[in-house]
Amino acid sequence: MALAHHVLHLGPLDNNTYVLACTVTREAAVVDAGFEPEAVIEVVRRQGLEVRLLLNTHAHYDHVAGMREVQEAVGGDYWLHPADRPLLDRLSEQGAAFGFPPARAPETVRDLADGQRIPIGGESVEVLHTPGHSPGGVCFLSGDSLWAGDTLFAGSIGRTDLPGGSFAELERSIHTRLFTLGDGVRVYPGHGPATTIGRERLDNPFVGERARLA
Ligand SMILES: [Zn+2]
Ligand SMILES: [Zn+2]
Picture (cartoon, rainbow, N blue to C red):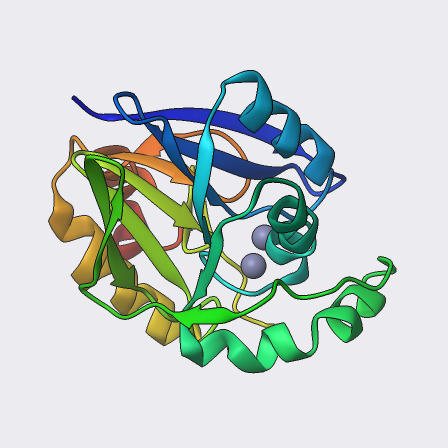
């Protein structure tokens, strides 16, 4: 048995929102909700899911702005790594910098920690702290699936020029925490299409083998 997952491509920055669900208990987690929260709410209702968790890979506006609306509609405890708390506290200012409207943070913030295992019904995800794109960036691992936020993309990596970003840190996170997971692990990023650890370990032009040869 594994986590079922629904992928929604939402908003002007092609953000991915993932709804992970235990197929036995129908308990669910929403991973990142920035734009168009009504589309997330509709999937939850149509699938008859019980949202227990709202998990953020990091606290950039495009991943958080819709969380409060999802929480008010379908519930769920909100979780974020504490190193991204300063970003959450400046949610509306972050949005304004990119011309987006003000947004409210979710109610009651719970702290994610590296190595923590979070149950979703009869399944669970493990938290991997992968700073570099932002100080509190995390990935969620379950079996051979990884929800990677803006840490690793198909053929790219998260930008490191925003406050708290560091290329050296991001490269270390990806090399030591992600590339060691095994080539068969499927990667579901915060933007754009899915990929695999194997493909990125070889071909990623920023952090893969190819980057070292260039
Ligand atoms: Zn981001
Ligand atoms: Zn993003």
